[in-house]
Length: 211
Ligand SMILES: C[S@@+](CC[C@H](N)C(=O)[O-])C[C@H]1O[C@@H](n2cnc3c(N)ncnc32)[C@H](O)[C@@H]1O
Image (cartoon, rainbow, N blue to C red):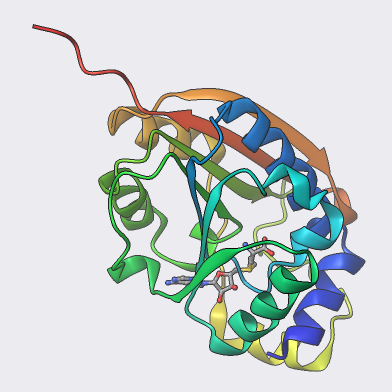
């Protein structure tokens, strides 16, 4: 799918704007010190940056990843437009080459595109101090990630014929993260088009018990 079609759809349904608002809340809830390492996985084109004040992210050492090279190209230009310095890496989250031990990993609307339980293992295996995950929640009775009958840009519709993103039950995600010793410390939900909601959750690594 083209970056333009992707961005048009996400803005049309309000998910780009909601993702930005939730990112702001998650970064604030994480209370990071200046210079903290923030990694945005599956960052796509970085569309959220158009709906955020760049100053929110400027104090941090930033890394953005995705496996779609055309999205990363758009992301690089956007970062420069917003005067944000960041490392941009092509990376498959399922076989990540990222280093362990960042302060915050953000994963927005990404786990829907992979085996999410494996995604939880990868994210928690990277041992960040905190992890912000944003997921989509549908109204009861609507199972597919894309609203049936919604008109979407051409290349987006074509990609969806193959992709089939799978929604993640919020409680199952919270339980899986808690089992990996990342209990949920903060959650916020924002309504978007078609009676859906976008949910942001901050998970913080449990301190090791001292002996
Ligand atoms: C719905 S988009 C969300 C993009 C971005 N996080 C945002 O909120 O604008 C899903 C993104 O996940 C990326 N993605 C899918 N599978 C991935 C994987 N295995 N590793 C890294 N990125 C992946 C896609 O290329 C796409 O950019």
